[in-house]
Length: 490
Image 1 (cartoon, one colour):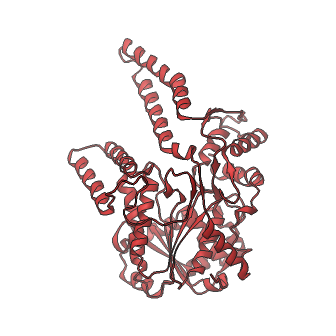
Image 2 (image 1 turned 45 degrees about the vertical axis):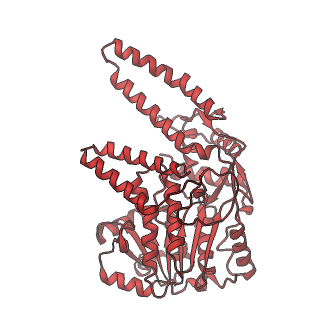
Image 3 (image 1 turned 180 degrees about the vertical axis):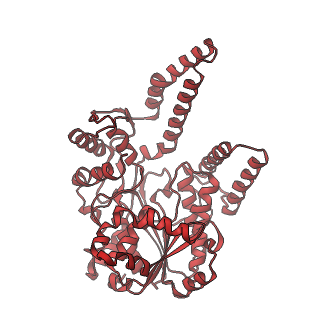
């Protein structure tokens, strides 16, 4: 594998980025504009009804973020002109054929000009409606690839998936592809067109029955988990992402294609500055709950490896893979994580949280510091169910009896408590596979990519993604947790 100058490759190139308002996409956009302002054009596809609403989303959700402050300082008064010259907003919808594009002139221009297509559009909600998750993660991947195949200058198609398409598998998880219809539990019969039809039929049935919007949403979420479990996946997100990978592999033809599978993505390590984060991501919900004094217990195995990867390293790996496989027939898969080369454990995370919030407690709305302590550890699902029974379910039963005895005087309190308990139980069941996950993600291909880039001597100081270089103690104590407090705590 030979890798030429990455900056030289990016010069005068046109790139389509789907899911442009997403976390990784924003970091990718900022990186390209900052390190190679001579890129020809970034076409940014985002869901919007028209150009006006697309421009508003661009201002509010992309360039208006702190993430762009370094680029803004670098450009000074030329920032606005750089954005207007180097980016083109593309209002669209990847759930539709031809990406839902309505401007034929723009479609013609993109098909003539695009060198690279990067699919970053996804719904990462583990408890998503089946029709929504299928539309974005599965059919969306197909639609973006089909559009890429129409681009006459296309050099490479990059599809960003997730390492957790592996489901609950333990041991060493290889960088292998999925063939059409392959399942995790060996059950035959997985047919993506049939899955789409099942979702449509269920939705039509619910609507014909006059079900409420809330009832439809819940039924479609339940269907997602049922269909995922049928074939061995734990939730809608990883199931529909796996099917998206299947379609990309099956339909790519002679298009040079790269699939990038990040693990759990965390705040930026270095660029454009350390600690930028957005949204409450998987493990950050633990930090937020703990720092605010709301996390009373932890369910999981403290010895289990937690595979995390800073967002800027994921973006750098994407860019290097993109350059490495441009115009070279490829169907390589790159798992981008840390569990093999620099493992972190849940026990480390617990220690970092205690040390950080003990030294720098969160100040609550009343202006008082929140005191944190060691939380109760629940090492298996049985201990969790016992904990919930004694702390919540028995009091709920008592409240139910009192409610009956006092002519339903406590109905609102009972209903609210019951709803919250059911919500927690559902969330725990959805996240259970990751709390006790014992897989290690092989990153042989990713390491070969890094070595090839290093040997070429072409810009690895700018496009670093070696997780062995991370000191987790320093990263969590001085970068990630301060970043979470600054950008996510409300």
